[in-house]
Image (cartoon, rainbow, N blue to C red; front, side, top):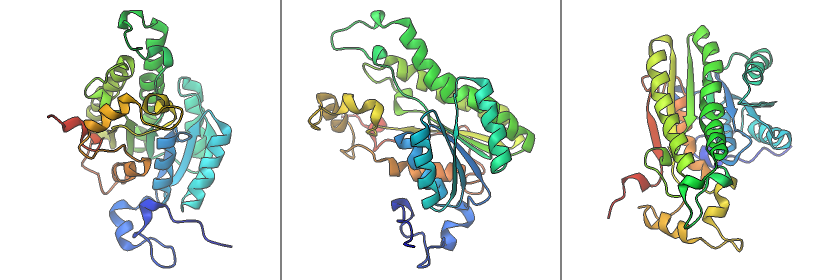
Length: 292
């Protein structure tokens, strides 16, 4: 049977027989890690799951979409790891606890949690010429629930309790560059991601002496399903907003999901980032540092 294609983020990390080179083990060896990726059915979370699998992790893809989840779990297997799918409602404590228990029974105690679920709500996006005062409060709440409560807080507390009992773990929250500096038209999303960054730092302080590290990754502009309409016209051409974004990005392009692999593997690896906690790692092509 033909071997699975090598993920782009592993090129140069494998021997001719497909095994990991010594440089890809050691500091970045994830073969003893059980990783839960909430939002692994999405574009960014899914590629993160595959990246971790490439370094030997046992990866559980969690999300609501069963078809996408099972497909991503199979991709994880092809990437070199051991993958499975577990449905979850990240806003329901019982569902999250069920995921913790099922993972423990099926593949072992979770040692790495990636909170990659999130997004915006159409009604929370300010239309040109519109008033922020007219954005429905329900839309604000939904964005905060999606990104802060279900996207970080609740899973971190439930999985975190299990990690604290075991005395080790790494939680990686996927925040956003918008959480550092508000982005026009998406105030609710920006505010929610700012809260995720602050929560990350708070939990890192609380758990620093108990073996659990908590960090965040803030991607810049990465085309995905939820922001597609803001960045592209129906014919695939760039919107005026995209032109402004790229004009403010020193690297003059959008990011690719694979370019988050290095940051997530580093923060997941217990040896490589053992003294790193409470940090917000920005991967944005320079957007956040650009001036004139």
